[in-house]
Amino acid sequence: MEYAVVDIETTGGNAGGSRITEIAVLIHNGKEVIERWETLVNPQQHIPLYITALTGISNEMVYEAPLFQDIAKELLELLSNRIFVAHNVNFDYSFVRHQLEDAGYKWTAPKLCTVRAARKIKPGLPSYSLGNLCRSLDISLENRHRAGGDADATAVLLSLLINDGALEIQKMIKKTAPDQRLPPNLPPEDFQNLPEKPGVYYFYNAQKKVVYVGKAVNLKKKSSFTLQRSQGYTSKTAFFKGHIRYFF
Image 1 (cartoon, rainbow, N blue to C red):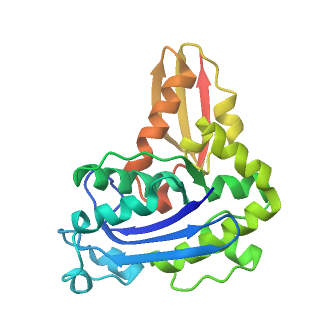
Image 2: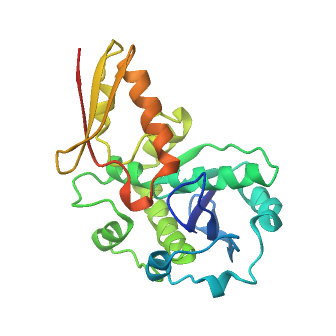
């Protein structure tokens, strides 16, 4: 089994409207990285100043970079028949899948989120952001918020997680569990405890403020759909962080 460890940088947080500006793919054989691929991408849209301030990627840097459709076939070959791995996997996966479809390629893959895997295998850490995990686990992280630097750190994290929790990793991959498709910062028990009954549900953020209210015939099914749908339409740093409450 091989893994494709992926990190992307984008023009914004909406997979339907923003575009990839840089992508790195590291092929991992379960022990180490055996192949590396990285490129800037011309997004054919303006890169906002705040994105440039975060990533260092400017409009000038991507001006002569290849268009996504020019790298799509090579990218697809790298991803095919491999486990798609990323930190906050749904963000990266949604962008890659969306842009591959725009380029004329149908693609799906089993996914592994290193945030969720780290929560299961390394419980009790103060934070599971990539930067804080690297500090807690003594993983080198260079070129933060660049695709190559973040992918390098994620690949090291993957090696550590496989070494310490191979069976848990296999279980997460095999079942492609519903909680893998949910925001990684959502406590799993919040979703698992939702009843399959009619009711009203509330999403709270980390500050205990209501950020979404919905009603449903089946609380678990509808809240799952709402959370999964949100994954490709929000920035990496703004993933849902909080709890779900419900009333019959």
